[in-house]
Image 1 (cartoon, rainbow, N blue to C red):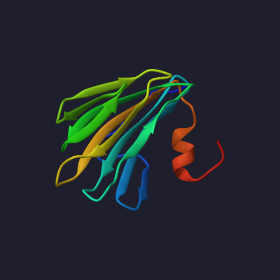
Image 2 (image 1 turned 30 degrees about the vertical axis):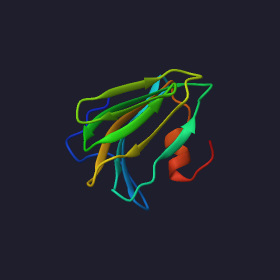
Image 3 (image 1 turned 120 degrees about the vertical axis):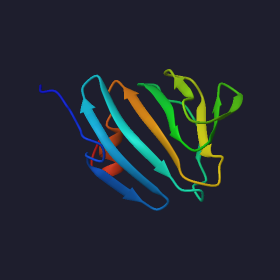
Image 4 (image 1 turned 90 degrees about the horizontal axis):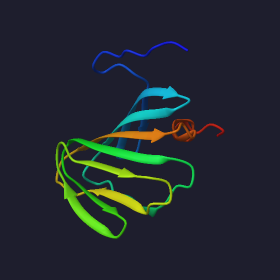
Length: 119
């Protein structure tokens, strides 16, 4: 295994309608993305994961997170972690772009799903 070092803007880009993501790393212990959502992004419905912790750190904009029945508005610097079995979801709560750092630990194939490949 080798280390990963990316300059600003480097990394694989995954483009979707109202979404632009940048892959930062794929390691057995974690996978990490920089997520970008436009103001028209409707959000991610409440859901749980049985196989990983889902972590979010707000880089830019304003999100509305729901975690374990609690809803909070979250601006730059806010942190949310949803361990396995924790109900969570989010949406862009602002008028501009929402940028999030998203980590899945351990690696569960989410990036491969975003690419449209097999898991």
